[in-house]
Image 1 (cartoon, helix red, strand yellow):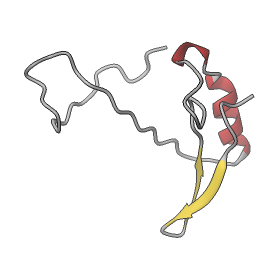
Image 2 (cartoon, rainbow, N blue to C red):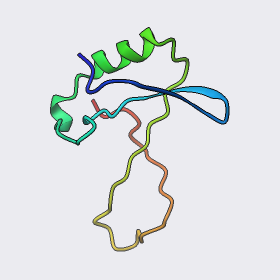
Image 3 (cartoon, one colour):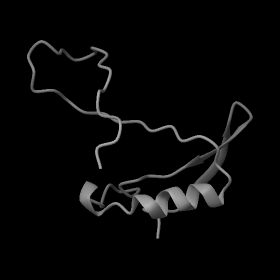
Image 4 (cartoon, one colour):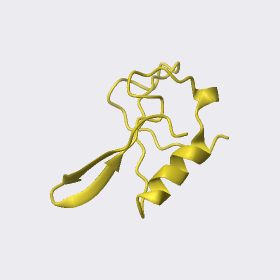
Length: 77
């Protein structure tokens, strides 16, 4: 079962599907996310691309708020 209900809509006339991977109220811990079910649900809606957003901080003083950081670990599972 996916993390939450899929939200179908359009952005600038492009069909889009939104899925809150931690649940709409952020109730699912990262270790409990059913990634397979989420991807399956998106596949069932014929999604061809997946865009993921993330927000996090840093414990390194040289990285300031607003800095752009390119990740070096794309898949961490």
